[in-house]
Every structure is written in structure tokens, then in C-alpha cells.
Length: 389
Image 1 (cartoon, rainbow, N blue to C red):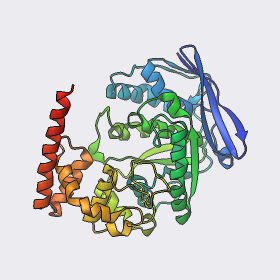
Image 2: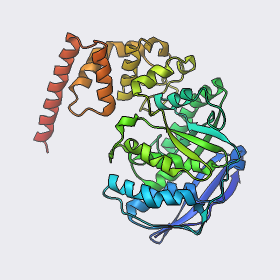
Image 3: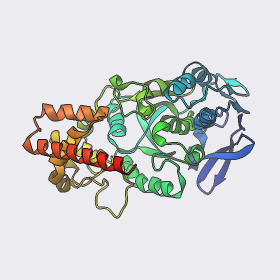
Image 4: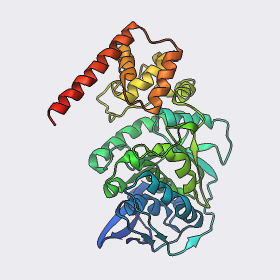
């Protein structure tokens, strides 16, 4: 059994740290979250919702029921029992159906902030969420951005991930200042405890942080990378299940929504390109940001090239010349399109971009040449690998 104790709060300089002791298979450990002390008044210490969701994958992975020596939200408990645990076990056959055993259930609405928040990475999805809510009023208007260290900066956490987290925050903070919003940062050792792939677990990791601040967020928007029609059970990409998972993590105090679902990635890119504040801050790169690089993005990874091509097809790429190496991309543009067309296994976003390429008439003889070249290269690589198995 996985036993979670009551949350406890301590201070360290200008930081507040909330933690729980937990025991799994006779081994004791501690899960902690650290955040700026000024947000302490919005912290939920009365319930252990955040810790339950943070450690849920650990219970599912090991097959241990979770017992909490603290109350949890009655609404969250219902959703876990009737929907989420079964859904997650269907997605991943290695997970075991487990029981949640809280000390008691709470029906209390703890919210006092009556405001909304969303995570900000300065990527296409999070910026789309922000600008899609421009016309909203409280409690749906986005007044706060969040920036969490629970896996997106390194699957298993540690010092390197924490350095990337701090480095990327500089760009997030600069954008937030331009649009007059405050950023709530949360650091944690959750990644070190889970030791699981971030791509398979990230929605629960993110929401665990947001659940700490149910007194602040009446509504919280989770920026999914997919559109309505991309829903599906996919073990390698849990984002395809966001529409089921995220709303079912709501409590009596905070409602969670999956945002920007009506937009394709091309439409999201077009949306944010209408706002000049994004021109110097768009960050889509899979490589850690480094101040030693002139641009925020490496302009070489698949996400950079996909975004640059989309912007180029929209006629907006030059607007982002301070965050991308536009000249480098244009030299490799036809090769990239050929590589994309040559992929045997195309992701949903690949197919969407290919449709846009075809609509704009960008397939010329040079693209076809690189397509064939990449197909031949893939076949040679596969043959070479098979010879040395």
C-alpha cells in the first residue's frame, strides 16, 4: 500500500515548501513543492488533492492502493473511482486498478481568488490559450500564468532539469511583464520520485501543481496540443486523452478546462502571429534554451522546423527572426518538406502540416527530389541496422 501523510508547510527565505511523507513497500520518502512565499495565502493545506494526483501514477505503476491520512475533494474522489483510474488502465496495460482510501471527503469550496490561470511555456499552445481568452471577464479571464518544474525540463528531474527550468523562466517572465501578468512558479521533486517518461504522465504532473492553489484558481486552463477530433487512447502520447482526463480532475473549488481544442496547430500559429508581443518570445524548441545562443530556438529540431515552415507558409516567418535563425531554415526548407513527406509513420500534426503544404502548392521538383533521397536514406539505414542486430 502507498500511504500518504498529511501535508506540512515550512518556510525557507522567500520560498514556501509544502510536502508530504509517504510510504511505499516499507520505504519512506518525501514529495515536496516549492513556490514564492507571497502565494502562501492561496495554498490548500486542508486537503491532499495535489499529492494524490502527483503520486497517482506511482500507485498505478506499482499496483498499490493509495491510503491518505488526510481529506481529499469529494468530487475528485468520485471522478477517480468512476472514470480516471479505469481510463488510465485502458491506456496503459501495465497499470493496475487500485483503490483510493482517504481519511475523509470534503465538499467545501475553498476558492477565494475567483480568478483564472494557465501554464505558460511561450509555445504555440500556451500562447493560443492566452490570446483565445482575451475577451473574457472574471472568473474566466486569465490573470495568472504558471510555470512548473515537474518534467517538461527533463523527464527525471535533478539539477540539470532545474537549471533548464530557471533558464527558460527568463523568457516566460519577460513575456508576462509585457502583457502585465504575474507568474506563479513551482519547483518540485516529483520527477525524481516517479522516474517515468514525461510524455506518458505530464497532464497529471501539471494538474498536481495547480491543485495546490485551488484558493486562487476558480478556473484553470490546460493547453492541450491536440484538437477535438484527435481524441484517442494512445499510450505513447497521453495528450490524446486530455479531453477525458483534465476535466475529471476538477474539485469543488477549481474547474479544469482543456483549452484551444477548436484550433488546429496551423490555426493556433496563425492566431498568435497576430500579436506582436509573441515575436520576441515564441519558444517551441525541444533543446534546452541557453543564453549562449543568439536565438531562443535552435532552428534545427523537428518542432522548430515544423513551426518555422508553418509561419513561412502563413507569410509570417520574418516577424520571428529574433527567435529563429530564418536564413538557416530557408537553406534547408525543401529538404525539410521532403523529409516530412518521406516519413512512413506520420503523426497527426505531420498530416495536418502536409495538408497545408498541399493547399499552398509548395510541392515542387526540389521537394520531390529530397523526398526520394530521404526514402532511400531511411531504407539504407534500416538495412544497415538489420545487418548488425
